[in-house]
Amino acid sequence: MKVLLSFGEVLVDLLPTDATGKQHQPIAGGAPANVAVGYAKLGGKSYFAGGISTDPYGVMLTAALAEQGVATDYLAEVPGAPTATVQVYLDEQGERTFEFNRNGTADMRYSKQHFDTIPWQGIDIFHLCSNTFTETALFNTSLYGAHCANAFNKLVSFDVNLRLSLWQDTSLLAERVERCFSHTQVLKMSREEADYLALARDKSLARAREMSLAEARSSSGKNSFEDYLQFCLAQGVEVILVTDGANPVQCISARQRFSVPVPQIAAVDTTAAGDSFISGFLFALGLELEYDLEHLTLLQRLESRAHLEAAVAFAIRCGAMTCGQKGAFPALPTLAQIG
Image (cartoon, rainbow, N blue to C red; front, side, top):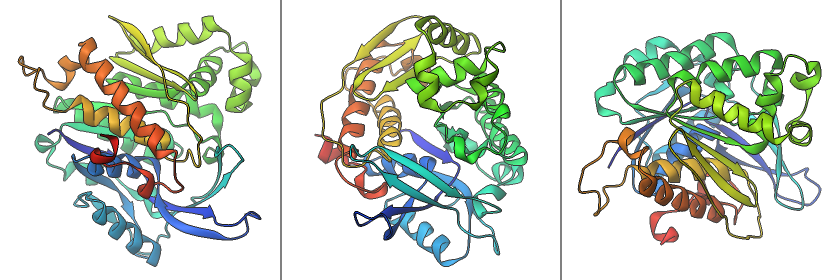
């Protein structure tokens, strides 16, 4: 079994518990933390790296990660810094919006020196997302982590996972996201995120950097989306995974392209669906399959349509099951639940 190191923020999701939205339940979350937990619950070995507060929420989060089977060896305690929180709002379809409290919080204090203490020889996959790109020092730390993974020939997985409300200056967003592509082998993004980034690259559209994701989707045409996929591949990305709600998931590489349909579901909460998808994909990609007589490496498996199709189909089942209940960690499935 391959070993995952997921880097970024672990924070407290404040989920509504009544129809008015005035009562909330604190639940452990954060996209990269969800990925670490999702991988561990499926039976994989996962570590989480990031800054953690010593306040009561921080203690709760450390315990929550450990309870789910995630190794916390690479958490860095930051005394005096508070835990980040995010207010989650759900609409009638279970779709969510977020309001972040992330000013001077512990997750922003991880440094390059922390990455230098990690024995990279024991890691197979490094995963990150763009929520650690919003502030310059943490962005540089994030790229350094990806650089370390590259230096040890480890697979880098990058989930774009745009949260525009986190960015004080969205004009920096596209450039920082795209600087990570040269370090990335597996790139995951939603169709809305791809359309947003495609528009941001078009210097003639001055409003692109001020658009919401939904506005970008309605303004983008097929050509700009297709052009952006080719741009990503040209930067060195090996495989692109594009999720699109109820529409099929697209898998694109320089060698092949295919789509896998998603099941019709009645979503209760989509908060951790994307995180469940990518953790499921990485877990399935690293499985020691009976028919893998060639003992392919992770990078070689990215060239195999059989491995990719199996991993995408498994990831879709994980994401769909996660939508069936509220919360992040509790909603992520076990291997037995996937079947």
